[in-house]
Image (cartoon, rainbow, N blue to C red):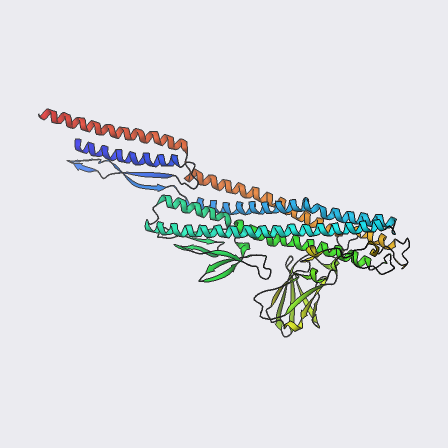
Length: 554
């Protein structure tokens, strides 16, 4: 009986040691990110029959496992993706909002200064000093528009850098997960430390994109991004990357490797930081650039047209103050041909009516050859407008026409082009007039002596609704862009708050299941310590019984 007692005590000591070791490890890792609490499952050894009775034989550790809930972990990943996407969107929108509110405020201010110069010259139309001052105001206006475009270009470069950095980190995680899967397959998914590392990497990955996890019987996990990109398949790691945009090289595209080929990914469906960066670039930044270009075209066209209605100090019809709206420098970037086109046609866009422009971009499609069918799809509204080919010019668009260079070759059915009528205007806007005498102050008299009627008409442009089909003034074009960005920023802030609340709920749920509760672990520590001491005391008692028995037999 004493021998059984010693054996039972030994199993109790060993089980208590395991309990103390696991509890100590939980306490030590209470502040370790990604650590899942571990527990010991303890069971009774099979009882032994002695005579007509059965007696217990002690205990043993039947299992050591981490406390993990797949559903809670999945909800946390979803919450992480949403909150990361919302935070990235709000961060980028805040930067753009501040850009328009602070640096951008110089654009309408300089337009107001230009109009103020016109009013001042209207009082003394022959004053050469005021004429030169007006040209200085014009140059300041053009410079401010140029600088605003440069800042928006900086936002484009910064966003592309961030996209590249995210894809690089995703690839690093992909490689790490592949290596972890290889090690987990050796232990059939029993190594809890590796499982914690695996989950931590997958949770980090969910910051960058939406993640779907597929557990495998081998203990490994396959991981997909955005529901369509296989990133990790068992121990095989895939890669994603970037390549120049098509047709606009500066607008990076996301690629993924599959079957030895590189495929372009629809980044709008990826989610997380990566999806937010691409959405910000495509849905907010590019439209803001195009609307700034619309403003620049409006300024150039309005005052150049006004100049043509009057006479300068030399008695000549007024020449352009600003760059002509169809100058080659203004036309850069208006047309982009997709690389998948099979035809060789080169296109150009001519602005016919600035007031009818919307600041939008379009997709031009050539669908059939017999009869020739040309369609223009508005990227903002989705509206499709059929175009008519007259000679080598496509007509029917709002404010612009498209010329086909016959010498370059024909268009082929299925060819597509990205049309951006206002693309380069903000960067190309400049003052072409160098002599203040060229300002056309007079309205009807070539002599120009004291006649300010054309300047008076020019000053009225400040309040004339000449843009967007006669709905807005020049200033409104810029201010509406600013207001739209401000509204999106506020909406992004609200979304970030909502996503944060959902994430916090998911995090609390995971912590309640898998997190370390120090109060609970401290209580367990005392309990298992007492159990260890009691089992050790049984061993002492068994030893004393043996000694007493041996002493009695001497």
